[in-house]
Image (cartoon, rainbow, N blue to C red; front, top):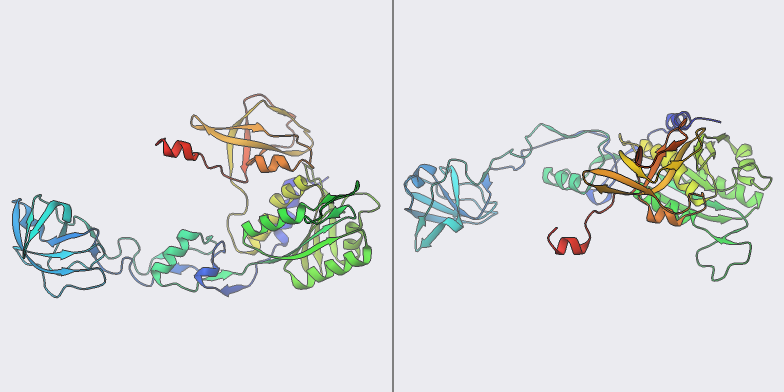
Length: 412
């Protein structure tokens, strides 16, 4: 039986980067930069007013209250035609360029304009309410680096720099296939005593969307060797990665194992982990293939530990694994010390620390606990139990929102 870390190391070693492409900002979310971004100009590109008010020379306000002559009004998107000299002011809107001669802005709330004069009620210091050119980013500085994941705020920064077509590793196309005579589609109105609805493809397609991949849905294939072979070959020819679920255990009807062995260089491992011990990985016609177990919880655990980090590496991301925090496991748990065990828990932040409680039955077919839970309590190899309140690593597959509407409405 292979250790989890050893198996993941081999999977990641085989994950080669995807080609570099140029995309629009609308297409760039979740992708990883393939080229450093260097600021082509300052941000802000010019010194401007941080608020609506009057551009002045600060020394003129030192004897406040004081009256100054207003030379003109300057809205955002316009430039003053006059310069501020002693005894004068120019009315400016937020974002308007600071006129020549001015060194501060008095906010409009501290002023009162009558005709062409403004009364200023407070003294201000030099630089008040002024946003300097380059105060955010300086021309020539490296803003983002290769491997940075482009989030919504990254895209906004790129827009501020005029970088409308970043260079990234392209999205992978991932073919997804469910197997087994017992598996039917979600639209099946009734189930025979031997049938179950396919949960693995909806789960995998959503997990892949979260990663940023494009899905090629190969549907469901029963225990038909010829059709299964055709569908896997289709995926290998049209996608960057193929993910199957089911058929990788030791039974005589585990056709995926048989066909993969015939089609390509695929290894079948028993990984020292629970759930998701049976696992297949290799290539078909040069395309990486992940053969996941059939039970849905095993599918998610195997995807999280193997397929997700491999896809992120192929996409050029630096951070590959889910974040972990240390918390207390309330109620404790007994586990198999011969395996790394992933228990579904609900993790909450309480009194400055994380607490977790097991949720639902922990069998690998109990899918509902995944929907309720937000983390895996990871009990390492060699540890037989976690005592009530004992420390445990929590792998957060979904960070909880910590305040409900009622709390926000009450000002908490």
